[in-house]
Image (tube, rainbow, N blue to C red; front, side, top):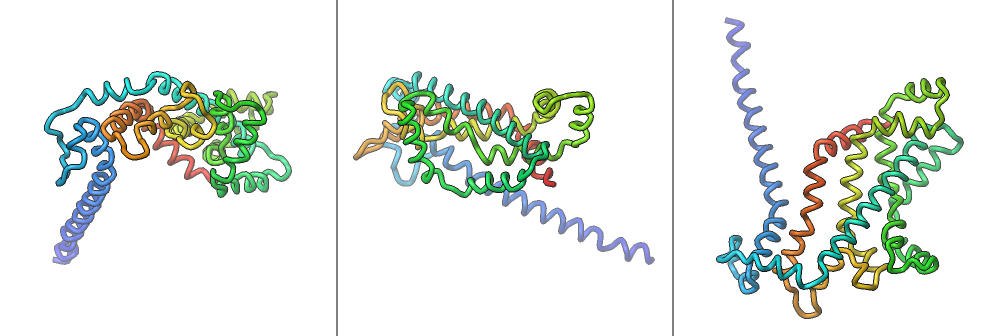
Amino acid sequence: MLRSQAAAPAPRRRHRFQLRHLLLHGLLLAGSGLMLLPFLWMLSTSLKEPAEIFTYPPIWIPSRLAWENYVEAVRAMPFGRFYLNSLVVATGITVLQLLTASLAGFAFARLRFRGRDALFLLYLATLMIPFQVTMIPNFILVRYLRWYDTYQALILPPAFSAFSTFLMRQYLLSIPLELDEAARVDGASSWRIWGQIIMPLSGPVVATLTIFIFLNAWNDFLWPLVVTNSLEMRTLPVGLSTFQGQYNVQWHLLMAGSVIALAPVLAIYMMGQNWFVEGITLSGMGGR
């Protein structure tokens, strides 16, 4: 009798638990749908004829799929050159920023020297400075070095990042220090510990940073616009802005070009999404 009374509330609790899960999944699905709307609108507009873009009520599926928008978008400007510039710049920034962030993160997480924590806090404080504040000094430096309208101007200034250093340090703190001590007993230098012990164990955070850095570099518009002048040095985001005139915007071509520009970013994210989630999780848990 007592056992049956104690077991009675269990179905109600299970029912409430399932209801909460249903509500949570419903909210997540609704949020995901809202975030996908701009992407779906871009895809839909890239296949519309100009007369259908601003019809009311809006048309999501065009009456005729205008695939020629993609051909016209590629022919309207030196798309291949812009694509190559974006690949070179984004890849160069990613490689250099990974190198500088891993070295700085290793120093802040694994080495002991006077003023280390204060220097790290000072380094982190630079995250509070907006890019617009540092843009003019960087531009003056680029002009002084005669790098204007070159790959050096596009790649070298963004090769250092306080955020990447912070993420790398947080991950490296989660690796046991006993590995370093054992390596030093065997006579290994700090460079050897960084290159042969720590970096091979840092796959998740390296994959995470690769996605972050490449996305930012690929989508960056302001800095390439400031430091380039010739058509040959323009990157893809700056090149796509040519579809936006003073009085009108060629939305169908702009959206078609944006869909083409999105392909490498999606490919990189799809390849590294598992490492991306793992790296974010581990770097968030690694504080000391």
